[in-house]
Image 1 (cartoon, each protein chain N blue to C red):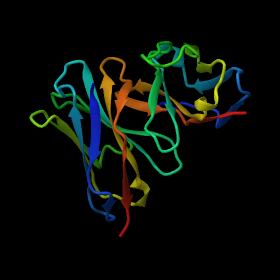
Image 2 (tube, rainbow over the protein chains, first blue to last red):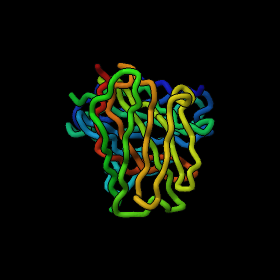
Image 3 (cartoon, chains in turn yellow, cyan):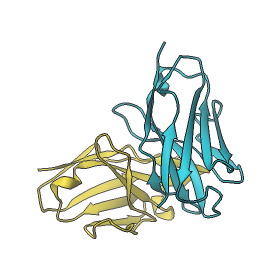
Length: 106
Length: 120
């Protein structure tokens, strides 16, 4: 089965840039989606199809995908960006989530 | 604005069947552009895909759960449902329903989630 690997945690200083990676075999050939989940809340879609932001998601959030790594970038990090982030792809007729990354804003 | 609401028992006994329903409001479950899915999250852990259904009834299941999962749709009630049989404590989780876009299978609308505990 297809696996997606994310770092357990990422720390970023307030106002700086955080990068969250999602590793998978030839992930660049797939569509990658990213979700933000705050404690006690349902996940929220922040990036779909590698680089697209849903309505209402700040431009500070961006995505890229190439080779074996997809990346979610959060620029000018704010305290409200503290959350768990999950990548997701569709493979062999099933959804696959990454292991999740906890982002801490210092 | 499309909304999803999960409902069902919050406590299920081991070896029994977990049953949940997701009610769709604000749009038709029969839209050709959407799929509908179930995702769960055990306490303190990550997200796990359970399965997906189209309004026509075609389904995709997580291979690791396939033998125990049934997802069905009731277009007359604008609902879709999850049944998970032979549950154990490992099935204790928050269960979410979600709307997926066809072709790319990403979820842009989620229910708030419902907690199901498996315990005698």
